[in-house]
Amino acid sequence: MRTSVRGHDSSVDHGGHRMKLSRRGLLAATTAAVSLTAPPAAADGGRLRTGFERLAADGYGLLDGQRVGIVTNPTGVTSGGPSRSSEAESGGVRHIVDVMHADDRVHLTAVFGPEHGFRGTAQAGGSEGRYDDPATGLPVYDTYLKSGRPLADVFTASGVDTVVFDIQDVGARFYTYIWTLYDCMEAAGLAGKRFVVLDRPNPVTGRTAQGPVLHKEFATFVGRQPIAQAHGMTAAELARLFNGEFLTTPVPLDTVLVSGWKRSEFYDASGLPWVPPSPNMPTPDTALVYAGTCLFEGTNLSEGRGTTRPFELLGADGIDGRWAREAERLGLPGVRFREAYFAPTFSKFQGKTVGGVQIHVHDRAAYDPVRTGVALLVTAKKVWSGFTWRSDNWIDKLTGSARVRTMIDAGATADEVVAAWQDELAAFRRVRKEYLVYR
Image 1 (cartoon, helix red, strand yellow):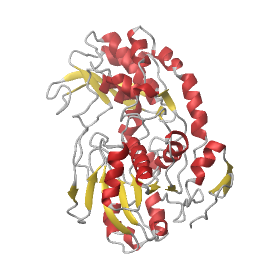
Image 2 (cartoon, one colour):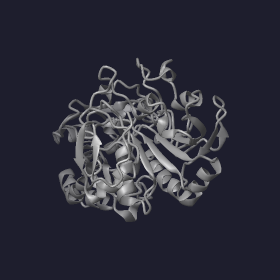
Image 3 (cartoon, one colour):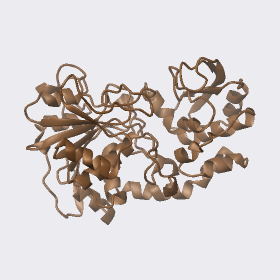
Image 4 (cartoon, helix red, strand yellow):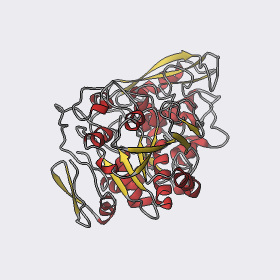
């Protein structure tokens, strides 16, 4: 099941294929001393198997003799489907911390919680702090808003030898878990720890990258490095890219890949249970639109927080059916817009009925979430005189530069805004290609 160390060979075996790597790609590949690779179809009748499942099926050999700490959240679960790979995987949808803690083949000694916490009890912008997990007795350390040497000190204090990462991402640059990955990789390197990524599918496919690329002067925790707004990569692929492009000193990196996943597949093809990665990401439909409509966090409109359809419902006090009609006239591919009214139970306009739109995606393959998000900003500003940006220019941090805001303020159309980032997006796509490992 495990491949041997490839040293400085300029190609790496993946799914029975030899992939030639550039100097950049070679760096990412050779930092992964032992990568669990597999043919395109899984052994269990073609069923998709996550990185954790494959690690468990291999008897946790990659972690043998190591004191292990894991960075995870409620999405770090077993598939809940039939499997012959390990008795430890039976018993329904279980958290992998509970599974690993009960298995003598792995020495799990610590858990590291990201934003929202390990067990997921905190809302946006919060975490659970330092505590002992009641279910396992394991110490849980808080990583949220920690980076560099302070985070390295957390890893050192925990006493682990290897840091494992297993969190379901949603494919957008400003979803903070990928920057938790980046910060933890950097800190693991500073602390002299190994790093292992257990991969999961990108729920909105990995077909291509879309949207503007972050400009470094706008780097924050919603975007540390210059990648596209919808990156089209998995966590393992991002880890390879981070190691090869952005980390000053690459960390010793192992990646355990998903088997049975194709880049063109959406989450519902995976057969995996959907566990909300954060409180306002309740379904894969939310993830589908999030890379575009999260931009409304940078405005005075509601992005649907406090409703049952966050990021699919958008609105504000004083908006009526004109917005839906204006957006519909654009003929955007794969999506329709419905006039909608809703009363958020928390966040913007809490308890007040507001008007706006609901997004209905009818052709996922044709739909471009970032272009749609920009078009909705343009049309909202056109039909509603109350439209304003957040006073802290949060929109610039989300889009990665001041360009989207300033162009819209100057009267640019959505197509003109989208055209303005195409050169930088093409450059990112060329770099990204070096780190893709799935067909």
